Length: 322
Image (cartoon, rainbow, N blue to C red):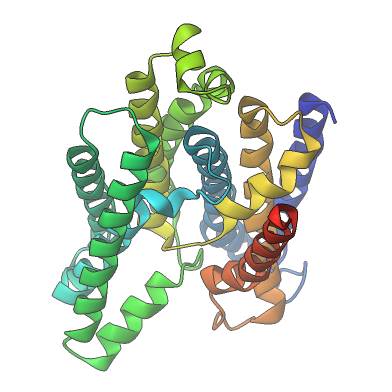
């Protein structure tokens, strides 16, 4: 399918999912109460949730497509660099220390700080080389360290309520978010997405191999800087305000790749729109399946993504079987 036609179809799907998220609540499409109450519900409760769903889903889909193209690894996804783990660790520390109870925006700000520190550690560990294997190993090291420290913070939680709050945040959610969260995360996510989108032509050249890409004029050091910086800004900000939402960055590019020409650059815009659609629809499904908010968004995406990952592994194994 033509990439622009696919992007147009996914754009319509994302718009429909956005409107569905905006106007559908736990009681369907009805809005009880006075005109002022309906205005507050739409503009201060549902609008931030729909905007964050669109931005976070789009960011995860785009970052997954870029990382799979850059690392030339079909199993790459935004968490592979450890940046989302760093953001999660920062937020958990804010809850553990009690700062999140005192300062309103301490949670997302600590998440952003954690993502920044994880990016710094990734850059130092990876060094100045251009090899993708070194970057993957550095990302796994950062991710493992962040996961270990997060587990330590949970283990040393001052009380069961703090531990419960940490766990609920780590599961990922769009509930109880305000326009302040949108204004905090949107600029960073926008800059990150622009950096990632700007890699499209270089990723197409890189699909021919690093030597061929260099012969075509691709600066591999600059490309790696754009991939890491874009992922850090976009995914770090998304995780800082919404928690960990898994499998979207892995699943969406895989589902859309057969519908494109196979060139990594052609997959970026469809993956952004596809990721936004998936997260918005998953969030709408939560209002039907769990109207009280007990089921978290990250849990639902994991329940959807884990069988997909299993199918991917089995299909790959059958393809490689003699």
